[in-house]
Image 1 (cartoon, rainbow, N blue to C red):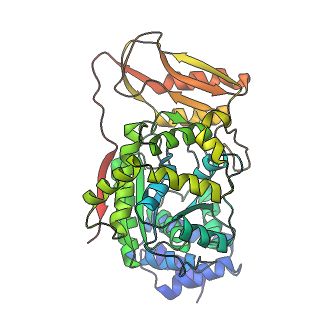
Image 2 (tube, rainbow, N blue to C red; image 1 turned 120 degrees about the vertical axis):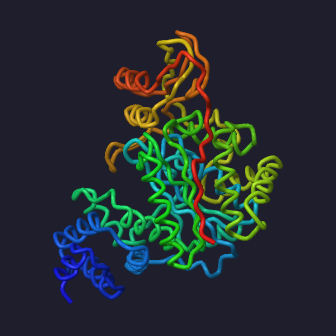
Image 3 (cartoon, one colour; image 1 turned 180 degrees about the vertical axis):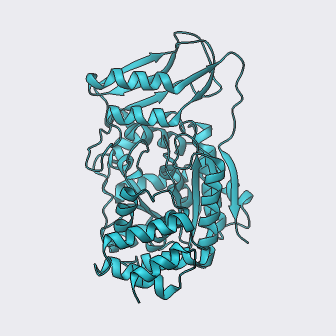
Length: 436
């Protein structure tokens, strides 16, 4: 078997067999197939696509390229959630303890922020002392004793994905739905989950800009996961406007804690509860999603979810005192309000631009090696649909470096659009996709 023959086969739109895909992945990870041939293969997939069966085979081959978490000693059900990324998306911090309070075990492996999107690990690590690096036995212990743990991807988990993603990034093949699907599913199933709920974002602040593209990815995730005999649910949600009021690492922790107390932003709570309820239903805790949502609301109201979060913070070395008293947590050196340039109603707040501004302030990374500042960010005082007077505060900027302020202010101003007539607020959920 030769790599060039498989490249030609895929170039001509012919499906590859399991043996052929295994040969390519093993050869690439083992350094017997060079980058330039895998680049050609990726480009062929980009243009010719893959069947759901091929995607599932590719996913299996990528999982087999490295370590897999053995969670046989962990109580069931094991259900995780994955978001395709957004601005102000702190849902994981609310959802994981909420699902755990309902009886689901959540083995969550998350990422760091890059570009305009924030990362769950950066938010958690803004809690003093919190460690996202756990040994396997500690991971298992935390899952059994608390019901969830939140860690980063180790170097030995799905090395094929790490190598292939680096190639996709420099060869213009990132936006391939079969490749995105295999990348996401391989990492998630390597962590040991039996079922997955996906939050596929669409809009200016998302990777998928249109509902049609988001639906195509969601459909691919569900059908490919079904080929792998896993229960998959995909929720398409709007990311045209930032999620919640806070954008920035510890600012988002504070907002998540407010939601866990049941008194946070209803837009954020609503999406978190919806996703958590799908996890609870997928785990068989309740008979259907509606009864799961009732249970989730109960666990927020009685404080169970908040107590789970505190237990997790303590287990992973974080400061419980800071969580209970957020004023003792990281703060920016300066704050300044930004004033409205017009009156009327907020027509929209462009999530991509708010994300860019937060990166300039230091809340995110332009490059992987960049550090993040835990206390900086943006608080959205006015959001889509709110009435506003000219000169009224529309947001508060939290910053450390005055030299970055003017550029951030310009971008934030450009993110806000205004209307002379009332603007209807819409829900976050656009579509939900499940398989029988």
